[in-house]
Length: 360
Image (cartoon, rainbow, N blue to C red; front, side):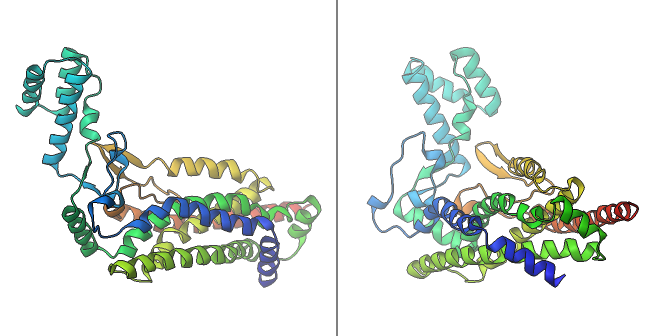
């Protein structure tokens, strides 16, 4: 097995794409994470950005915006509806006020939206409530919100959830492009036949390939994680945020490594079944699409629920509102269990192939 591991790692690390992929992953993560390195206490009004109405739903604490409570949400939505009735639908101000009172009598958002549609041609009024999630904060409100959230978790924990979100997605695509190298050389006809006629056990062969793939990914994961851990700790030190240099490694172990193991398992089984690693690529792309559709917008708020056996976990909420559910932990444990079963299936297929070759 040691020889297989050593030879396979050598095949991987001599590929230019291995290093290009590392750089691309680092750049992709930075483009998406750099905004969260701007989290800070506000010192003057100029730091709070005034955004147009269409951009407010995408705002975050870095812009000086904070989530609204239910009462503020209702006020913002009704204000938007009143404005649209008067300015876009030419409804008289007094009549528009009466329309707003209609909602305050206690009807549901859905019924109120139907009422506006039927009587005034106001389409999709419910989205005024769904989009009313954030408000421009005062300096005091923004800083109090930051202190409250940092009292719940360290800054590095909040940052780590966003890190594993973007890094997890990027790493899967990197592995899709890289892992065919694990088996490509062995899948040439003469070598494939030779391997099956040798006395090497399927566990040693498949296990050696999987371990080599994992060991090849560890430097990529480690380099990128160390870089962003340094940046996060630097920000935490600058603003005296609660932090721990170990937070990001904890999240990487929980949310990144099981994904790597699952990708290796799928590549092993599909390659042995088809005698070619390339059919794994469309399978993995479909798997990514399946895993990426867990975010839903309910009443204007993003709620994420990972599908069973999602190969990565997303944290689409705003920075200080990301949450880890018990289902996410169950998903990661399930990935490891199913990965083991897939590796076992791959060894069974290998044994059957060897038996067939021995009869020729």
